[in-house]
Image 1: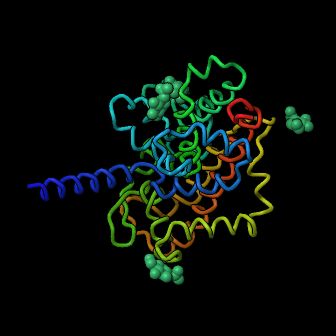
Image 2: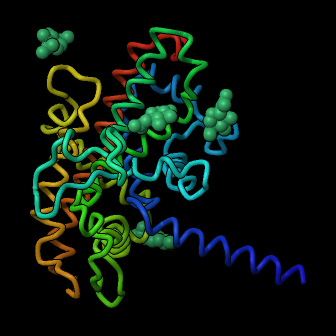
Image 3: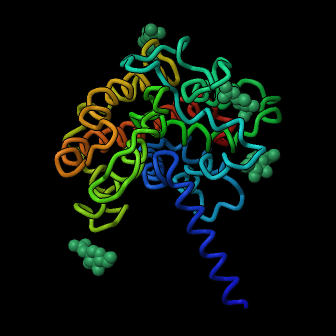
Length: 301
Ligand SMILES: *[C@@H]1O[C@H](CO)[C@@H](O)[C@H](O)[C@H]1NC(C)=O
Ligand SMILES: *[C@@H]1O[C@H](CO)[C@@H](O)[C@H](O)[C@H]1NC(C)=O
Ligand SMILES: *[C@@H]1O[C@H](CO)[C@@H](O)[C@H](O)[C@H]1NC(C)=O
Ligand SMILES: *[C@@H]1O[C@H](CO)[C@@H](O)[C@H](O)[C@H]1NC(C)=O
């Protein structure tokens, strides 16, 4: 009986993982973005993040282990209001993004989308340095986990996709022999295939390879990735504009419903996925550094 129960439990866990894994840049993608960000944290940021992470922090102050938290909670009824904050859709076949036109939920409620959420949580973390009342008003631990997660999402091209196919979720395709949808290909399958093909099925090995590219091939781009127009703390409109551009140019192209995607698609799209993971990490670090260098109280200095 006990064995059966335990098997049941394991089974439910596996199922839950599968279901949860199917919904956003997968766990691996979010972990990668946050792990890359950690390498670019300034001292104040390291201290502030350590302070803000949940007490239960089994990762011992490792932000990356909390970066999938918003996916884990969004199915619980008290968190359902967050589910539209993971993406922003454009009208069908529009390859550009506009905040006023696109950032709303399915009830057309303004600001309820991933870019609105990034503005929201950046503002809350920022204002906590100015007014100590806000420390009570907001839960800054949640703010940090939401911001870190949505920064990953906004860099996944199909999190800024067309509304008619829900960012590729209803575009049924084959990934090699597996039946899946285009959104899932970009959240999980390209990364999974890369892990198997190039990285000995090891996420740390993949992350090391991206970190090496950041100090070699991409090193000249890093400072332009970090900066925002008009010295804004975060510029999510720019990240979403890039994403829909990439969605049109790479994700949707040659991936109509019923297509089998294989080597050709994989090899030409993997560099896009890798660059977006790296950009997401670099920009998350830049935003947190801007927030916490202005925020000596949180950083404990
Ligand atoms: C902004 O954050 C607060 C606190 O989590 C939340 O109640 C509110 O719904 C958020 N709004 C948006 C548009 O993200
Ligand atoms: C802040 O949010 C975290 C995660 O949801 C929770 O564990 C913690 O209890 C909250 N803190 C307060 C003061 O409500
Ligand atoms: C690949 O991973 C296995 C264990 O998962 C390990 O034993 C092996 O040494 C690794 N190979 C390389 C080249 O790192
Ligand atoms: C941005 O910040 C830099 C350095 O603080 C300053 O020199 C520049 O004038 C600012 N630019 C704008 C558009 O505010």
